[in-house]
Length: 282
Length: 193
Ligand code: SF4
Image (cartoon, rainbow over the protein chains, first blue to last red):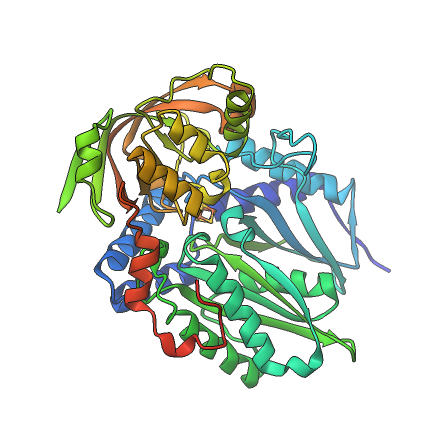
């Protein structure tokens, strides 16, 4: 079998660029959604907040400085071709890319080594959270995001019984968004993972927040649920920055997976308007 | 109408502020977030003096990004305020005049604000690059070992924010969403606040 060799430095350089880019340049899909929201926003304060967010994103892109001071914990989804050979340690190459991006890109180092007792800053924003999936081929597909914790903290997972049905799913998602209220920097992107196991649901929810906001689930029943949930969330009234208005969310993205006969796990991962992600292929 | 306020904030200007007012702040403010609050609170509990004088000051909940070469400060938007709620009443009782952050506060914080005639401003979360334009200088006052979480003094000019909770306890996070809320979607779907 033919293997393609990729140097660890190539991986590091790609990861570095992704994290700098995603922190400076908001995605075109988010920018469009923000502009559309500004046109339709019912509250004058809400309109003004959206204008300031759009202006903020323009400044960040023009000056190549972070959109938000919370440049996040580094999260990466990797699709790793089975015909790839790395001349070094893949995870270490990724973490080196994160280290260089956060150092050279003037990004905030927001990671502590121990969650409960020490809470000492690692000073280079490592380690990254890396989700690797082996796929066939000789390419590596990287999707990176800097995940801020104002919104991450508002996320939740629930193991629903199958008898709860679609109404139970709706109720849990709306309940989670309602409890979050003004805290996760609305307008938010709501990532939902349904199915799999406890941890798979959470991972799907994260993946859902990385999906462009102008796309929908392939199954029309879930696509309709996405639309319906978005409309209901925007009736909650929190509005931009939580100061009141008709734009609380920009999108609801649902990702699904097969699950157990006894279960219906649902995870809701909330992402702020600074929904930063970037992708590349090596 | 936008109200311009020169810091340190006076009793009268605090009394004049109403929830929902747009405000531009000029002068100096302190910064501090989770880890610094934990330390300050521990000192208060032990009856020790604080390393910074908080009396009459506003504290901005922020952990800035590093300043790019040629910049005075890095992007510096607000962090969620609720995480400071358990420490805030003690600081307000010791003379802190107000806070700048984002998001809701606890009943205990609002009671302590009314008791001490203080104000809570909201800055726009995620507008860090824009907000940093109004921060002209920074100086680390203490806890430098905390990196981004160190306590700083910012010199600000026309720092944009909104009065989220005024000194009488009026709270935009409670009143404003209600004006845009369609109660018809709420029954059984979500609990009432
Ligand atoms: S929730 Fe998002 S926009 Fe708000 S402060 Fe955190 S990272 Fe920034």
